[in-house]
Length: 157
Image (cartoon, rainbow, N blue to C red; front, side):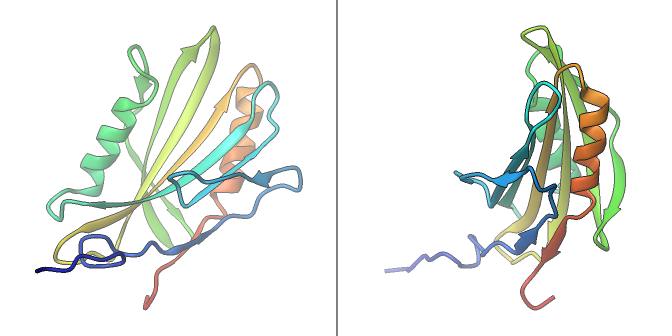
């Protein structure tokens, strides 16, 4: 009888991840994510969520980013063109998504980077940053400062 395990070829262990956040921010229970943190924004919390994804080895990071961004915000969301950004010496594919939620503007930035793959799975990190409310511009600047501190440490890298 075959044995399956975690970590294993189709369910690899996630890398270590860290962010530098303002003193007023706190780590929150991560639920199904690797890391979840938030701090006070002008009207609503500024949030960052980091997820590890093991996907079909034929899937591309760009295709995953497109799917994730398209599903954010629901009908009427505006998905901006993709762009590349370097953070912590690593290239990230990125897209901003904006929409109105209960009459208040929301912007999410989705970042995806490829990790070392196995024969059975491609691996990605997906980071979502979220700001909302009337202080969107100032809160986005704070979010961007936090995201720029993102460090990924892959075992054996």
